[in-house]
Image 1 (cartoon, one colour):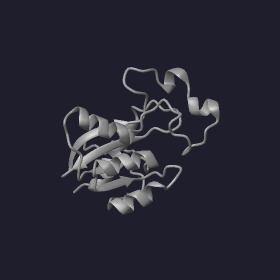
Image 2 (cartoon, helix red, strand yellow; image 1 turned 135 degrees about the vertical axis):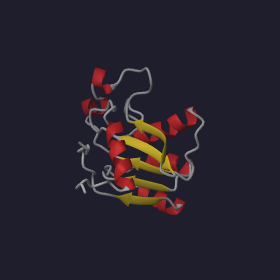
Image 3 (cartoon, rainbow, N blue to C red; image 1 turned 45 degrees about the vertical axis):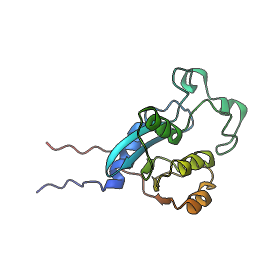
Image 4 (tube, rainbow, N blue to C red; image 1 turned 90 degrees about the horizontal axis):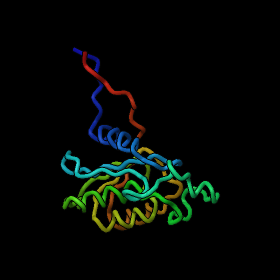
Length: 160
């Protein structure tokens, strides 16, 4: 018998969200999101400039240049948020994320929370906190469960 510790399903999808975040082009936060229903990935998203446009890795961070703190003036940013991209990718491919769980590396900003309410997700699971908690009121009113977990291990377990 081996000593492999198999992650639970939430830890598994949070770890996948962490890998998705590696594609982010934001200099402040690498965020990743995964939409899941019935243990199947429906779509993924990370934060970065709109497709085909110059990003912060090329141009520098506009928010840093202007001294804008995290959680404020989200509209002054080159990036599309990970949660927005998970919705967009699902829509582009004709996949409904209604009643899904979103696994994300951070809790959502209030703008993303409004979008997630409108696409009717049922649950949001994260291991990181965004700079504000305004989303909690929206989620509670909409009946969306929010869970904050421990960050999953970055280690990948291989069998020899």
